[in-house]
Image 1 (cartoon, one colour):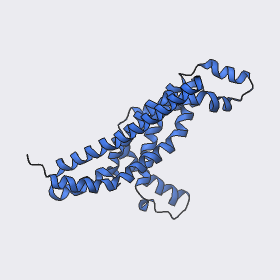
Image 2 (image 1 turned 180 degrees about the vertical axis):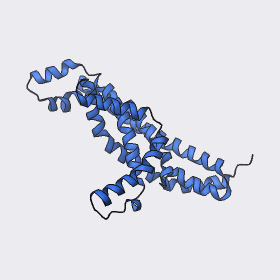
Image 3 (image 1 turned 135 degrees about the vertical axis):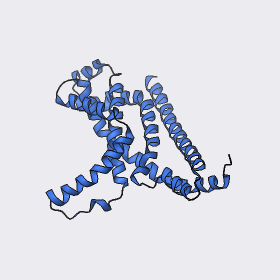
Image 4 (image 1 turned 90 degrees about the vertical axis):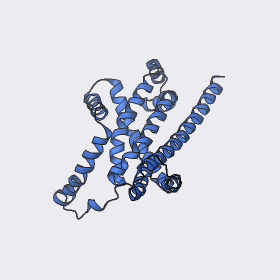
Length: 237
């Protein structure tokens, strides 16, 4: 089997142009997902009320369905649904079919990542002893102050490795954004491969690019972990 190294070099350079789109999807998705994921984790931690049951059902549904199916379903249904709401229900002249398709990528990946991060936050919050909340309330702190000053800093340290895993998995999942016609790394490589049917070389290039990106992300999280660990030691001393 002959590998076209010249094509791989050209495709590698071209695929680098898709990195900003991939990182944009990853960062925006995280920013959208963190707040609802945290409140869902709080609801599930209390284990009572309809909020806890709804959060559990949502997490079970999202985790029980493949990301590919979520993309196909939402990308097929959502534009038509939004078009009906805007034009028929709200009587607005909005053409949702001309929207940038990256918006649908934000929605799909945010729905998925919210479920993942809610489990991460829930497990991290459970590592903090319940007595610390009671102690904070007994000295006059409000529940919000107790979370901000005592609970969350400790939970963040525990959650960081799992947040890293979730971020890496999200970064890899963005390779499916090409199914929504988003011009990310995978889409650029596939388009170039279509001219000469150099799909093996294109997939190898995509593999290398994602390995490099994921390695950088993991190194960044390790640096943050080292900083927080040294900070904790300093505080303890």
